[in-house]
Image 1 (cartoon, one colour):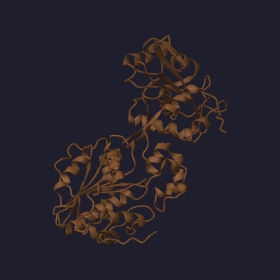
Image 2 (cartoon, helix red, strand yellow; image 1 turned 90 degrees about the vertical axis):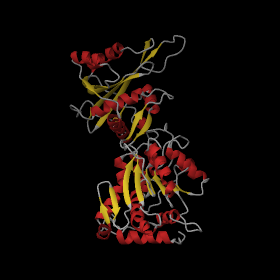
Image 3 (cartoon, one colour; image 1 turned 180 degrees about the vertical axis):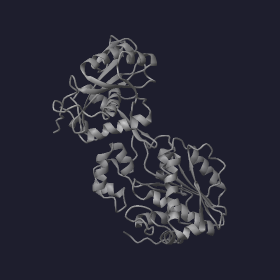
Image 4 (cartoon, helix red, strand yellow; image 1 turned 30 degrees about the horizontal axis):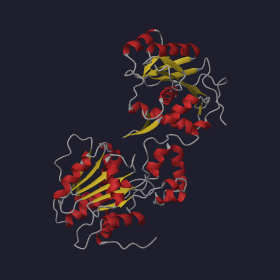
Length: 490
């Protein structure tokens, strides 16, 4: 690597980190904070000045894959500005902010800075630490935390803003408010440190800032975002380029790849912008679980119902717990089809008319209850009227509410992914279920990971949702004997 000639600001930053800051966790916990040459190089450019001595950049987009020291670096920068630059700058009353989509996310950088202060006797002498702020005693400079879900974010006068994970912001309101408020400052700097987002050509604030940086049209904006191009997806050298930290090895990246949907691995560990409709399972993973036996008559199962409104497809998912933390799944689908002149969609049950009546679905549910040992029927009350569920409960059917909200669907979706990629699931190669699995769309959910959802522009995916619900509940039930229903795994 070529030798980097450090500017005066970066030299001060490096000295400040070594003298005042300590790593707060991991194998290096307690040791002086130092950064690898590639990150020192980014810092050197970020803090560079023009011929007049003014800061060269007013905004920056730093795109980095996960585990590349983003939070520690962001916290160190915030403390450097708070302690060193506030003393040197002619712009008094410096205000430093860490902003993020949620308060929990915003406190990652702020929390790291807070712990660094608590672990440093030298910093404890010069800084006062409060719950949501750190104040420099000598200059009055403040470091505070803000989130886009806060009730009031206007009226601030920021000097430095560290925007964490801009891709997770639901809107650009907080980013724009802080950027606008910085105009009165002599040397403002908005630093965005983020993973890639979904849909580079979309309307999100992160996509907008990324495009502006990539185009290079703003000389006052610093842009750094190593990524992996389409033709490099299987090139491990390109993977390492997007993960310059020495502790991130190809073996670790391969382990991450096996543990999550492709779109999340590409975004979070290859720093690639992805399309929202990308596959949620690794290629061939569902097929590898095929060729098995679907739930058998008399077997203990859970049913999951994804009920349609009008012209949508309705699905019943069936999940049977088997020995050794393994499961068998199947599904049945329904569609209303009023057009006698054209072929109906590929479903298990076609119903004449404009809508799927509850009676038709629950007639089949009763038949399944007679066939299997059904321990739960999971349903969303928003989609099934209370009068219907009460009637079924009165008949003795084991109805259990399962709202299709993120707090339930995120773990259910991720649980289905887990058993598929670990080959702990068996299915009988039903073409309709396979098509629904392929059409399911992964959606990011701030603070909860991701969930399966429906994309009305694609083929139906209701069976995938229903199976995810059924499997989530089936995992609460141990198998009752496994001699007759042992799962065959190749």
